[in-house]
Length: 305
Figure (cartoon, rainbow, N blue to C red):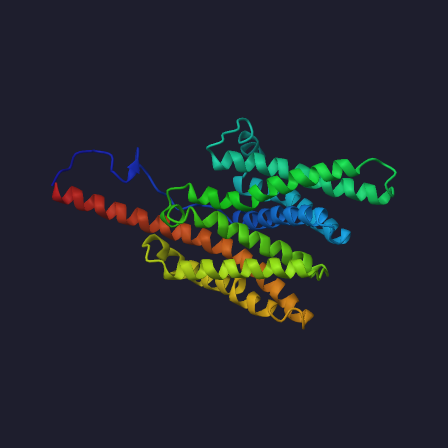
């Protein structure tokens, strides 16, 4: 047996090359809040330009502003110290999802707040202050950055070396985007809005979530198995049902029953939260399994040598 002191192939200067993420509850919460806020800004901007109910536009803007205000504290709480978040803003790196995400979050938070407060001031002063142009310009910026915010977390996960995430790098942004869109429309419905367009958005999001769930269930990718086993599997199955077929069936009866629409909204929001938690748990499981396989492989090589 070879007993030389080489650094193991599955390590980096004595440290594991692939470690499970140590994220706490703040990260999936941030993924949900940011995704919902970003999608709400997009819905509000489209509603404003399509001549929808002004109250719907107002509430969408405030959901975006609230999410933009909550997201940085959640992210900073996970990082541990505020200066770690500020350090990410020292340089803008186009090829770094973390850098793009940090700058997007700052731009979105400010734009969403400006849009909501400018609209409020315009309403309070009954148009006496020339704030409409500020509100509309901020609206466009918050919608553009909101679209990025709703999907970049999926890009962020896919850019890692954790198998279950990297092997689904193309699916994750679409998955998180559809989830954010569904939860944003559902939030507006729970605030009392019954616009047909919101129900159509909900149906579209539920169809997409159902398709994603079926695709993942039928996948023969070994790494994706982490999403079906243990705690991640339980969360994933619950998330898939609550985000896809359950609200989809309920929304088919939404025109006849307001309770069905309300239940669909609640189901979608619960499923959206669980979706993020399931992917995080699957990442932890996948990284642990990959590290164990690499360690076993390395020990086998040493014995053979």
